[in-house]
Every structure is written in structure tokens, then in C-alpha cells.
Length: 283
Image (cartoon, rainbow, N blue to C red; front, side, top):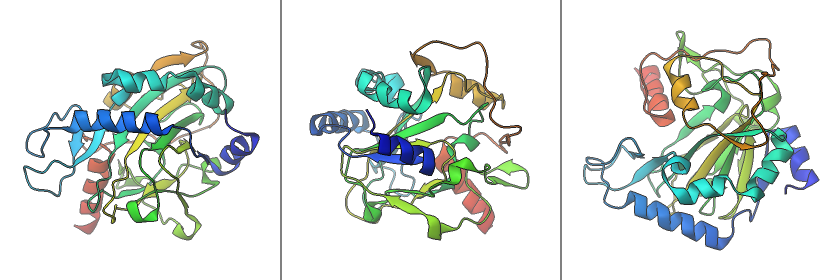
């Protein structure tokens, strides 16, 4: 369970850190499975439905950037996503009726791990209310040298910032961001960060020789229904499953309006969209 102080920080700042959430045994088991999944894959030859490779490496390079949906494809991760210890914490933040939403693993290899620009998760998948969050589990020590999470506390209570350029969704905040307000979320391996889907966040490239591997699971309240945005909505909803409580027949609305992402073309991932956006801005 989260402490009252942690719950209060989540409400106030849009995130809270829970060091030691994973045991060293759990961290080691996850890392072994990730190495098994990644083994034998190269930039030139890998399963694009299950992983994304770091682009700036030779064709025979083996550095993986992201593993897609581990809680869908691999039983070890699915079991963890359903664990009572985790769901008890989620109930404190989301209420008794909880949906699992999506999962991914960001690998952040040493000396090459990609940048993630400032964005708010809810910009990608509009819902009828804001009771959605991601939990980031550090599987390595996370600090400023290897690209730890950066957040802007308190901004989850405000509006969705502009993520568009010329009418198209860019996957990153396109208006000025006061980075002097940003706070690094550092923590040892095994730490969990509970982060509201409206909290602006980013991470710098990994400039160290150490990896910064992070398991990310997303959940939402059962009365937070998706707002239809086209093909992406069906893709996002395909892995949703009830974790605790019951399905609800009524949506709860907490906003009078919310921007809908309009994609200029099909994308592979957040990384892909943000890289195209930066290239377009420079061009």
C-alpha cells in the first residue's frame, strides 16, 4: 500500500515515488526475461510487432529501444500486472473499479538511449476523465546521468498543453515549457513511480555507460471511457481488461472539452512520432 504521504503527493504533484516496490529477485527475473526476448535481434532483422530497435546503430546492431506489450505477450509480466500488491495501490489512486490499459519496456541503452520530449500521456488517448496513470518501474538505478524521468509537478491539474503543429498531432508539447520547474525523479532499481496521465514528463538521452531499463504499466478507472479518435482507439482498446471491481455502464465526465489528436500519417511509436516532428521542425 502507498502511505498517506505518497497518496497526497500524487494528488498534489501528479506523481509519487515508491522506492523498493520491487524486490531484487523480481528485478533480476524481469531483466533475465528481457534479455531472453531481445537475444538474436538486430536492427536489420527483428520482429517489429514486438520490439523497436535503436535506429542509430549498424544493421547488425543489437540495441533494443522498446519492447511492446510485455503484459500481453509474456506470462511473467502479465502475472505481475494482476498482483494484489499492485492493485491495492491502484485502488488508492483510481478507486475500486480498475482497467489495465497498456504496457511497454523502455530500454535506454548506455550511451545511445533515445530522448523523450515533453508530453502528456492523455494527449495520445483522450478519455472522458483524467483518472488514468502510468507506473514506471526502474529496473536499473535511475538518475540524471542515464536519463531518468523528469516531471513538472502540479501541472496535471491544468489544461492539456498544445501537442500540435499545423493542425496535426506531434506527440510532444509544441508550446514553450518552463523547464526550470522540472524535477528529476531519481531512484534505485526496484523503485516505482505512479504518474498521472496529465503530468508533463520527459527524459534526456542516456549519456552514461549504464542502461536505464523501465517497465511501464498503465491503468485507468473503469468509468474513464475512451473518446473515439479513429483507428488508434481500436488499437489502444484491444488489450484493455478488467483488473478489479466491475465494468460500469456509465462514463464519468470531468472535462467540458478535450483536444483530439489528428495524425498526419500512421506511426510506429511515440519515438517515431517525436523524431518525425523534430525533423519537420528543423526542416
